[in-house]
Length: 307
Ligand SMILES: [Zn+2]
Image (cartoon, rainbow, N blue to C red; front, side, top):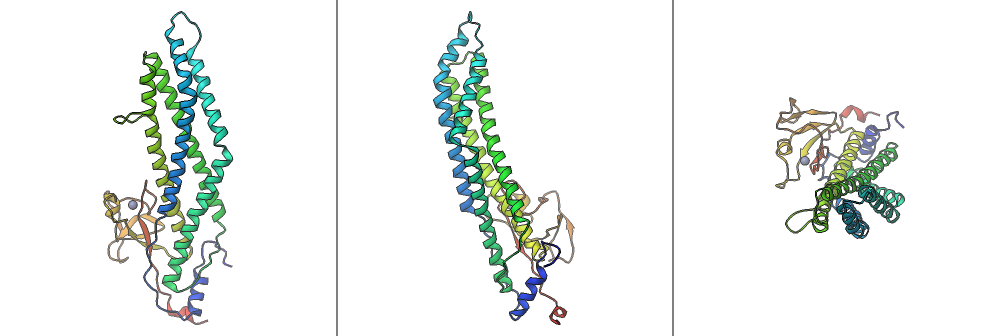
């Protein structure tokens, strides 16, 4: 075993040689985990639906009394405190239904699926190009997946907290401004014409799903390609009209895994600094990026065959 856990290049070349050193074939397309992103998105949307359900059941029931309290000028009860209690109740009742454990175990499952998908793409790459079955030794993987789980649990919790904070603020300022029950609840739930707080939360949930799965997939791709000695890749876009200009400008260009500030338009003869019109990063790094990296393999040199 080599001392660098990332480098399994030579083992792979030996395997390739044992099998007759056939010329390398063109790398297959590295597919984006669309189905996993959808699964994550559906989970987050159902999470928001639950937030909505608890808000309606608890806040909307308590709100008429709070508004009435606020309108009675001679009353000294602080309606603001009452509202704080109600918001706290929503949070507790939501947490009882969607426990930390449930959230954690969903995140673990989705992380494992995203990894399994990426592993399949990697396996397919090595198999197609070198004709070798490569079962990688990946001691870094457990920590990497754990960190992704933690980050995503945090993002979802933050989504919940921010939604409740915004609702609290809508109600506080609505009541101070003398708004009706109808107008306050409309601002939270929205109408056909005007989105409310929950549509904003749902939009944010969709963004998180696309962004996180894309980033995770990009990170694994980069680590795995580098582990087999691939230091350069061709930038490939998803080739649809959602591709950003700054990514389209890199389409087909040769790029370096260890230096995202350069590119080559002559297959590595010369390297240029990326222009201000070009994204500085690797596929998947940018917000909601669906681009992929086509690994550039170099054929083994002959002297390695003398063994
Ligand atoms: Zn992109």
